Image 1: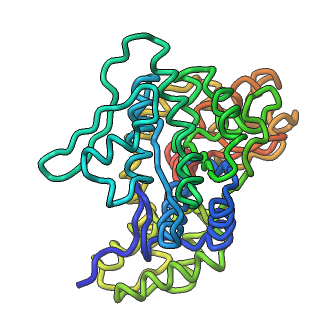
Image 2 (image 1 turned 45 degrees about the vertical axis):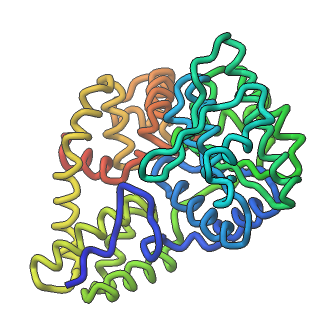
Image 3 (image 1 turned 180 degrees about the vertical axis):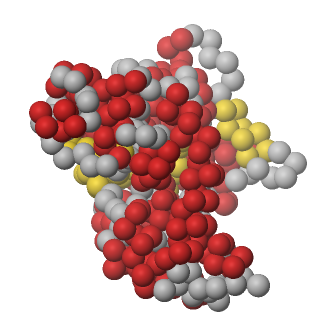
Length: 380
């Protein structure tokens, strides 16, 4: 018996990857051409899945791709380790995997990392304790310069994926300027920036005062178009031996609005509910699946609710029913939101926590299930 064909909460791979063909072509073309790219989207729009898919395909073409997760590097010392390990894993050829060859790979650096090989054959790369505070800066600069040297020596395009890039300023506020000075000279390297904090990523690359302003091509991710998602849902149900009626697909996408994470999550529960009931996935089945989603997410939503101010709660309630013209007198009166100043402050606080999306007076609750929970569970 086939298992559930939908995946949420992690990277979507293989047949679970949902469309994004246009964005995938654009990203692959940029990486292949050594163009810097910043993937811009709200949280849970499939940035990592998209970049991983592109990286897999480009590796088969001979592009060298390294991946570095800045979330695991809270200090400059840890960042140096993460860069060294990511560069080694992505750019060192199988012939260089022996310990001595791996060491020679880093031999041009002023400060070289320690290379170890575990019993299971995995190579670990890390720096021992730096003697001076400036040593970490020297190591990071040397590592950031490495990909260009490798691209020239091997006559191959190199791509460096920097995930959770918004963490860079908390590691060291001067690093964006250092990176700009190095990256702008690298004509053989594509730097792909992505992060889960939408407003911070926007600030880093869209604010004229920031060093990385306009240093990378923006690749915005929007909700997946309904026709493409409709075909995906039907195909995944059919591949697992289950059926879904057209009205049920419509009901799913009416609620999720084509957001990848939420659509996969609701489809997961709808498929499971239909399998448990021994029936096709109908609108009634989808409604019961929504109930299960809200049950599963309830503890998280209660936690959010308890940590926002009373005025922010009132604003969230209002936005869950519609967010056009939030500053208008009639809107504020109906939802008892007080002055425009109060609305503006609450909007900014909620935006900083990425609980809402929007601008120019049109806002919405970021998580469609949280919006549904608000509509159901909180008395307006």
